[in-house]
Length: 407
Image 1 (cartoon, rainbow, N blue to C red):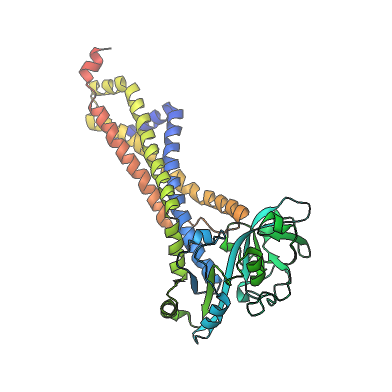
Image 2: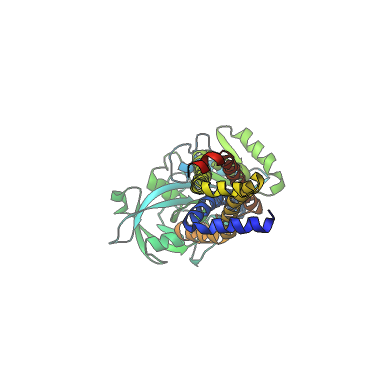
């Protein structure tokens, strides 16, 4: 039997039961697209994270030994750095360090008078925040007058900046006044003016953000007693010396953890290993379920067509020709599902990127690499080969004589 006749029979079989064909292709599609998107999201997190940290112009990050970076960015209280202002001054005495800035992150309640209070990510910076902060609107923060050499008795400026997400969720703009506090009760008596809007620091959290003077956020949240912060960001003069300087800082301050940009990304990945493992398990389950779906549908189809297969054998069709018909049919179905997944992965990734950006402000979270597309097609091919093998085994087990005798 020539290849053209085989293809005609295969295409007829595929078109014979359109519903089963569509379901089989959908099973392969879901398995392949899940694998591609998982790899692309992981790749996007690493690439976007590194770009974000590089764009901050910071090369070294100092955190507490017991810090959990996930809780750190949620305003956790563990692993704080104490006497942070003195530590920052001590760091910049190193001739290789250009700038060091303590940063505090806490969750606060904020609302415009008459509106519902919202839990908002609060970030405290020393002074203006330096070159990290660029404005979309209004003016920036100036000097932090409340700290007053650690006495925390200087005048409050009660000025804050917000990012675009906070401006939207709180329905505020430059010049508006909002209530802010660590608790809802405290927020009733604490009013702050919006002086600027900036998205420069938005990548450090998935939620809306309010940027404070460091000392004011410290006192607002009870971190002023030990001059506590979550981390200290460090910029060095020569980026090529980052490993050397980080080792020096680690030796001088063994009570803290010193991380470079790449170390920080790896640490975040490790601390989210449970989430990553869960995502991998879901993709693995999708691949297994997709394969089982195709196998079950194919075996059901072969069972319905066993008399047809028996007749083909009686008419003189070779076993190998029948094997090729069944195997090619399954393989084409799997290949079609894989090609559709690869072809649609790019527009789907763009849609996901738009949704993520609108929801949490992260841009370019899903970055598809060519290797992920090859990997996805590899999954589809393996699914096709496995299913084809089982289909051939099922056909080989059909006893033509007994089958025709029973008709």
